[in-house]
Figure: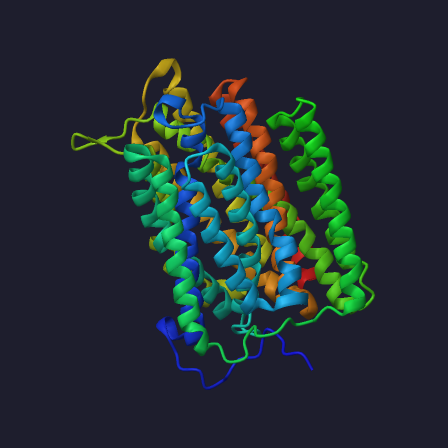
Amino acid sequence: MSTSVEAVRPEEPKWLFGQPRWFGTLFMVDMWERFSFYGMRAILILYLVAPAERGGLGVPIGTAAALFGLYMSTVFLAALPGGWISDRLLGPRRTVLAGALTIAAGHYAMAVPSVPSVYVGLTLVAAGTGLLKPSMGAMVSHLYPHDTGRRDAAWSVFYMSIQVSALLAPLVTGFLGERVNWHLGFAAAGVGMTFGVVQYVLGLRHFGDLGARPPRPVTPAELRPVLVRTGVIGGALTVLLAADVLAGAFTVEHLLALVGLTVVVVPVVYYRSILRDRGLLPEERRRVKAFLWLLLASAVFWMPYDQGGSLLNLFAERSTDRVVFDFELPASWLQSLHPGFILLLAPLFAWFWVRKGQHLGTSVKFAVGLFMMGASFVVMAFAALGAEGGAKVSLTFLVVVYLLQVAGELALAPPGLSALSRTAPRAYVSQMMGVWWLFAALGVGLGGQVARISTIVPQPLYFAAIGGLVLAVGAAVTLGARRIDRGLR
């Protein structure tokens, strides 16, 4: 008999905030993983657009923004096969370790000063993150299965934990990358992930049986067609790419188009495959269908969210007065505002969910998150208006923008993950966590493509249009909240 992800020793001693010790190990590992991820994210767009004489790649802004979105969507997209590997093949515990090792290898590859090694490194980081994130989410979802308020609070604490390193990472990698050498900044991110691997291995003794085996192990008869399909698809893509390169016709746009198509098609196809599973109980199928509306709303939320690392980062570098006490802050340091606000606000949101969370439906929380995100881009429209003609605007604009986005994220993401862990069919916990990030990939991928428009239309109009779209979706979720929440019960 297989051991499910929920198995854990009940006598496990408590850690910080009254959580089990294994929660503390995941807390620390994810903190280091976020250090590596946010450290690299803070300097990636700046490295892509920097001219060759400054050690960058000299990529045009529109293409660089699309590449950034491509990378971020691939990170989320990789959660789908990562969730399957966790649920069916390795189990969450070993999948987390494999993901952490792959991420570290990717960052070290990016430390090598050559263009091919950078792209290899980005691929490895994306693959490793896809293995790690859904597996960790599946283990955390074990907490408080029948207490929505306490489970939301635990997710908020876990969400807060990852921001500790996300706060420090841009300060370290940003200074090294912008002021010393870009590849030294990437190497610092690799060192952070190495600490995470060591922390995880040392803390495994606290896990008991938690995540030791896949919840629904794949049989040899089931594995063979998966391997065949993977080989066929991978081989076909490799042949197409090789032919494109050998013909001298390859451009970045070809890759962007391929991944963009994948990002749009895969969420729909995979979600339908879950619904077609005849093993689902009727109430499980009903909850999966109801949650689709929230997943689509989350995709709209993530579409402008991840432009904080691309367009907003470039706005900080080129259109923001960053001089404080006669010292010009590196543009990447402003990426620390986001995790800093999460550290300040997450305890308040956790406290609020415990006391009032039972009285607010998940859909209402999603709507609040969307309203906050839409408002942040309206503020950005005013900032861009003030920066027209080459002027530089006050830091206050970006401070307010990131504050609104953090409030929206805390209203939407932790309750969303918590609701997903409650509504997901038991055999699909890790894969449904992967589906969450799959729809995030859809939003981020679309956001990367939409960001290219910012080089064509005036920036004030661009930010105002995106903000208006998100606000409209928030209003639609508000109108349908009662029906959606009924389907999730």
